[in-house]
Length: 136
Image 1 (tube, rainbow, N blue to C red):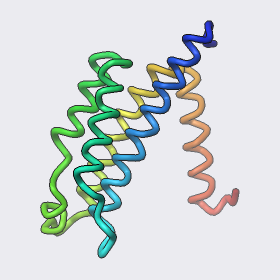
Image 2: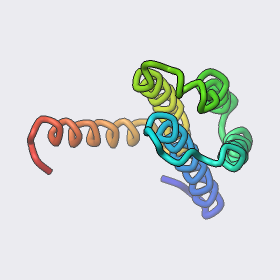
Image 3: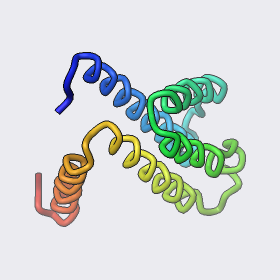
């Protein structure tokens, strides 16, 4: 449990950074794979990504920042590269997997790991039930 009000506020800011990283990386993938989708204004998107990266660098461990930076360095390519790629979905899945690993690290630093694992298991079970026709 989070102790002081300062600790709680810090956790909220960290969670906001994680959510923004998730939003920005998913917006990038969507802009890259959806045909005829209005492309992101790249300069604005890159600015927002740099802002969240700076927040991650300051508020998270070096290993968490390095993981996020690796995604940026390894997977972010100009839209034109995606347009020429015959298998955009494979690239998108690789990017999503890399982002998922970063999200697990970031969330794990804010939410105690046993709680995070329990929530992840519950989400996975829920998705599995819905995918396998088990309803809501």
